[in-house]
Length: 95
Image (cartoon, rainbow, N blue to C red; front, side, top):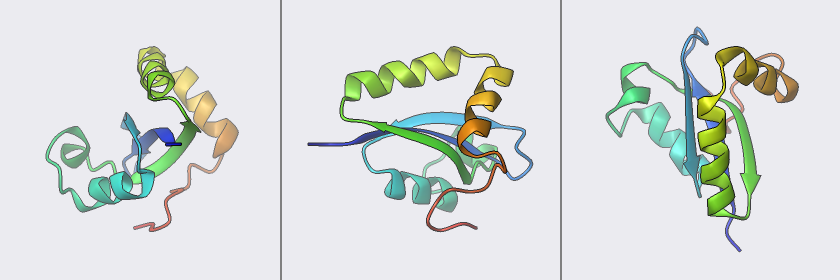
Protein backbone atom coordinates (compact mmCIF):
# COMPACT_ATOMS: atom_id res chain seq x y z
CA UNK A 1 0.00 0.00 0.00
CA UNK A 2 1.35 3.42 -0.95
CA UNK A 3 1.39 6.43 1.32
CA UNK A 4 0.87 9.92 -0.07
CA UNK A 5 1.81 13.15 1.64
CA UNK A 6 0.36 16.63 1.53
CA UNK A 7 3.06 19.00 2.70
CA UNK A 8 3.85 22.66 3.22
CA UNK A 9 7.26 24.18 2.57
CA UNK A 10 8.27 27.70 3.56
CA UNK A 11 11.17 30.07 3.21
CA UNK A 12 13.43 31.08 6.09
CA UNK A 13 11.37 34.17 6.94
CA UNK A 14 8.12 32.14 6.83
CA UNK A 15 6.62 34.71 4.44
CA UNK A 16 5.96 32.23 1.60
CA UNK A 17 4.03 28.96 1.77
CA UNK A 18 4.10 26.21 -0.85
CA UNK A 19 1.66 23.31 -0.69
CA UNK A 20 2.32 20.08 -2.59
CA UNK A 21 1.61 16.34 -2.83
CA UNK A 22 4.12 13.51 -3.14
CA UNK A 23 4.47 9.78 -2.58
CA UNK A 24 8.06 10.17 -1.31
CA UNK A 25 8.33 13.03 1.16
CA UNK A 26 12.02 12.64 1.91
CA UNK A 27 13.00 12.72 -1.77
CA UNK A 28 10.68 15.63 -2.56
CA UNK A 29 11.93 17.76 0.34
CA UNK A 30 15.51 17.13 -0.79
CA UNK A 31 14.56 18.29 -4.29
CA UNK A 32 13.21 21.52 -2.80
CA UNK A 33 16.30 22.03 -0.63
CA UNK A 34 18.70 21.47 -3.53
CA UNK A 35 16.71 23.66 -5.96
CA UNK A 36 16.97 20.82 -8.48
CA UNK A 37 13.55 21.59 -9.96
CA UNK A 38 13.09 25.14 -11.23
CA UNK A 39 9.90 26.93 -10.29
CA UNK A 40 8.09 28.55 -7.40
CA UNK A 41 9.98 26.92 -4.54
CA UNK A 42 13.38 27.61 -6.11
CA UNK A 43 12.47 31.21 -6.88
CA UNK A 44 11.17 31.89 -3.37
CA UNK A 45 13.70 29.60 -1.63
CA UNK A 46 11.12 27.39 0.12
CA UNK A 47 13.50 24.96 1.80
CA UNK A 48 11.87 24.19 5.16
CA UNK A 49 9.23 21.51 5.64
CA UNK A 50 6.86 23.03 8.20
CA UNK A 51 3.80 20.76 7.88
CA UNK A 52 2.77 17.41 6.46
CA UNK A 53 0.03 14.84 6.71
CA UNK A 54 -0.35 11.43 5.09
CA UNK A 55 -3.06 9.30 3.54
CA UNK A 56 -3.33 6.02 1.66
CA UNK A 57 -5.33 7.58 -1.16
CA UNK A 58 -3.92 9.78 -3.92
CA UNK A 59 -7.46 11.07 -4.52
CA UNK A 60 -7.69 12.20 -0.88
CA UNK A 61 -4.20 13.72 -1.01
CA UNK A 62 -4.97 15.77 -4.12
CA UNK A 63 -8.33 16.81 -2.70
CA UNK A 64 -6.69 17.91 0.56
CA UNK A 65 -4.00 19.82 -1.35
CA UNK A 66 -6.68 21.73 -3.26
CA UNK A 67 -8.58 22.38 -0.04
CA UNK A 68 -5.50 23.78 1.73
CA UNK A 69 -4.58 25.92 -1.28
CA UNK A 70 -8.05 27.48 -1.19
CA UNK A 71 -7.78 28.50 2.47
CA UNK A 72 -6.87 31.98 3.61
CA UNK A 73 -3.38 32.35 5.03
CA UNK A 74 -4.54 32.71 8.64
CA UNK A 75 -6.36 29.37 8.47
CA UNK A 76 -3.25 27.69 6.99
CA UNK A 77 -1.11 29.17 9.75
CA UNK A 78 -3.52 27.89 12.43
CA UNK A 79 -3.28 24.37 10.97
CA UNK A 80 0.53 24.52 10.84
CA UNK A 81 0.74 25.87 14.40
CA UNK A 82 -1.26 22.91 15.78
CA UNK A 83 1.42 20.46 14.61
CA UNK A 84 4.45 22.72 14.61
CA UNK A 85 4.02 25.77 16.89
CA UNK A 86 7.70 26.69 16.60
CA UNK A 87 7.59 26.55 12.78
CA UNK A 88 10.68 24.35 12.84
CA UNK A 89 11.98 22.50 9.78
CA UNK A 90 10.49 19.01 10.17
CA UNK A 91 12.70 17.37 7.57
CA UNK A 92 15.35 14.81 8.41
CA UNK A 93 17.99 17.06 6.83
CA UNK A 94 17.51 20.62 8.06
CA UNK A 95 19.58 23.28 6.33
